[in-house]
Amino acid sequence: MTQVDFPLNTPPDKNQAPTLLITQPLPPKWKWYHYFTFNTDHKVIGIQYLVTAFVFYLIGGLMAIAIRAELATPDADILDPNLYNAFMTNHGTIMIFLWIVPSAIGGFGNYLVPLMMGARDMAFPKLNAIAFWLNPPAGLLLLGSFFFGGSQSGWTAYPPLSLITAPIAQSMWILAIVLVGTSSILGSVNFVITILMMKVPSMKWDQVPLFCWAILATSILALLSTPVLAAGLVLLLFDINFGTSFFKPDAGGNVIIYQHLFWFYSHPAVYLMILPIFGIMSEVIPVHARKPIFGYKAIAYSSVAICVVGLFVWVHHMFTSGTPGWMRMFFTISTLIVAVPTGVKIFGWVATLWGGKIRFTSAMLFAIGLLAMFVMGGLSGVTMGTAPFDVHVHDTYYVVAHFHYVLFGGSVFGIYAGIYHWFPKITGKMINESWGRIHFVLTFIGTNLTFLPMHELGLQGMPRRVAMYDPQFTGLNQICTIGAFLLGISVIPFAINIIHSWMHGENAGDNPWQGLTLEWTTTSPPLIENWEVLPVVTHGPYDYGRNHHSETVSSS
Image (tube, rainbow, N blue to C red; front, top):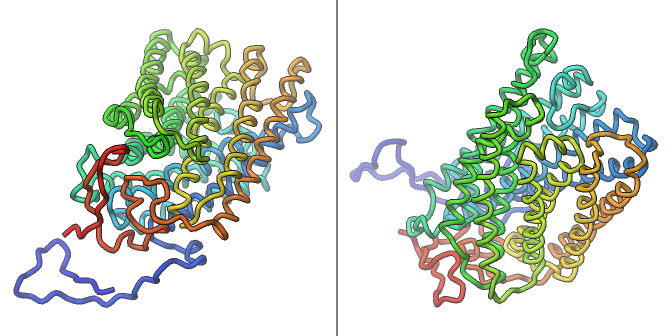
């Protein structure tokens, strides 16, 4: 490849011949071993995120199955209570920080944002690679902590419990989360600059795909909230190892301050996990319903609204922490308000489905399943956002049910929808739809069987995060355990389908879904530099059912 080079920050001199730098030509396509190297191609990094996150999903899922096996009976007959606590802590940590966030933002975001914006790569490719390579060490720290007893304080790491149980393991847990948070900050800077500065010149802002709007809002939210969590965890690390007393109540520390620092990030973290999924939904539904998205601007701006309002709801996690009445009232109102932009998206998707020529592909089935699951989780979230109700169900299985309907029925269903939708683009192969439908049915039934009874368990007063419970809760817990095993089984047809289709699937062509966003204008899989010549946008990204034609011409 020949590159024309001029000195940085100086305009080229017309009378001076440019310096020609002869660089090593890029290979026609990446080999399998390139995916295990420090590669700066955004598509390689996206696949690295997705595959690594899925490995941790399997690890976290095995922990979940062990937890549910233990809870099939009231007594601690499978896991030692300390090991149960370590499994419970690291299951939640892995699923949030090493599965949903890296796959939704790092995986889909890295792979798709430059393609959707008409760019050849992310703004800072090396920074992008560094952001990914912070994740594997973080995962190894979490798993290595089991050699020192495992962190046992829950994924919230509340002091004083986190100060007195397994200090080495807890320190390793903190370092792992700081690494993941640093990765999130680096990636977010990259996404913001790429989206704001690198879209193809012919693309207007009202032609930017909704997935990119969602990633932009997510990245801004991460930049505002993640440093606060990092600060709280560093202070906690000092308390554990260096004799400070920021959060030690017996030495004048304040445990409530830690809760504020933790939840200022960790409630927005829910939106870090779900906003990219909302973006995926806004791409999948119009394509497979063959209809323009209903309320494009409303859906785009609602992502920004969630980003803003989401920073002012964290105290609803602390209604039982001695929160004064005025604060309960304020955060009850703000929590109910944040449901409004979310509802805008839900109604926009339903209106898009209404009257559409729906193709019930695996991607569409998971998108429709997400609608059902997320509405269920959203309604229970509204109930817990009101202080009078929350004080009764706080720290019960009602919270577990709500959380998993939002994040498993929401985020995980959305990740599956995205994988089925973009699998032909990533691999150049069509996925087997029959196996995809089997995967959906098992996942849908397993999700409801696992988490729906937990609402009743919570209303009856069963506390969460305990290995032993009153025998009156045995029946419902056994139903939940059967559902969890069914969810574990559901991964098998998915894994078989992915591997077999990647190796032996039917060739997909460049645009098997007849999509209109820019990633479908290049080859499948895309060229290393995405296009031979940059595309020119000639129509909206969701103009289905309207006369249009795609153009890919020189942007010069």
